[in-house]
Length: 389
Image 1 (cartoon, rainbow, N blue to C red):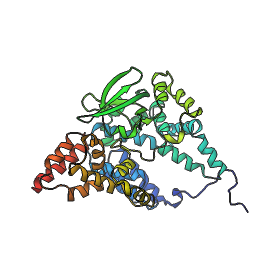
Image 2 (image 1 turned 180 degrees about the vertical axis):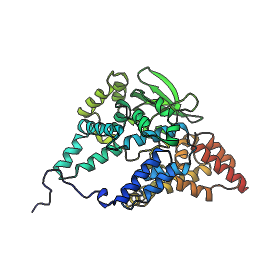
Image 3 (image 1 turned 30 degrees about the vertical axis):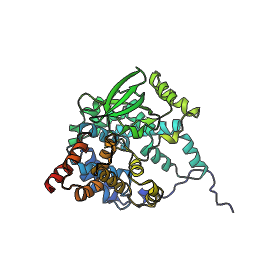
Image 4 (image 1 turned 90 degrees about the vertical axis):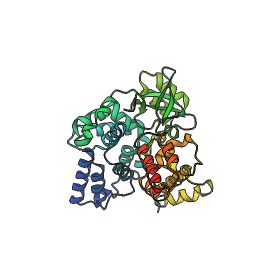
């Protein structure tokens, strides 16, 4: 007898099946804490639900935010607001209704093949829906900007500190989707970017965008105010695309039509728009920290350990910080050093092992090359090194 499942959607076991009414209440409380801007409380509540994966991306992001406290730069508050907007599933809220409409459109327009494969293999469609909701850059952008989800979430859901820090997020409303060429990093945490629509170069906030831009540097994304001096920034790490697609999107009156055409023609692959490593505090994907923080001879083994469930990212981040402390890292690596110090476990190890006599100048130099919140953490290491002396 064939073991291949018959075509058709089937309901497979879900996380919600393992949750009690009390667990659902904890999730509701966690969402309320997050929408009030209290990452520490949201993390505590989220982590208390046995059925939830404590190594999920959401848990990792909450842990990073909680470790930073409440003194966040405005751009990070705005990114956190946008992240919450794409996760808003409240059935009775206008934001939740908008989220479901955007999700349905994104699946039917861009990710229909995944649903078809799910049906052919007897899978559970909720897994496709959850995957797209969590990882699809296309869905996130459509909901937040074209469908107004960002503004709606701020008006309807943000409370407490989150609402108090929502002004910059509001200024992102209406930012157009464009095509860009990412150039070199510059001193002072800046990055050269060419706007392909106007053939003009500008300096923008550098959060490690080079690592998201691919080998060619051609990307699509949105430049928005950063709240840091007069610099713009990408609202989220831009998406690497072929040069022709970047140029087409840059000049198209309807850029989403160009993207759809490129996908239909095979010049783009929809899976390339799925982001496992959704980042808030940096544009450097955490998997990139693993690659650059692991000796080449060990990379295959360490990657295997990561797949097996061992948390290798903080260890790799610490190795990056150790190289920075030893002075063997070039200053162009500053965004990666910033991303490494924003890993809470790596920072804890650095405080114990790398804040040492004579290291003040080293850490202070790195701090001068990056922006908050990484700058403050690197300065902490500098001051701790001075105290150690």
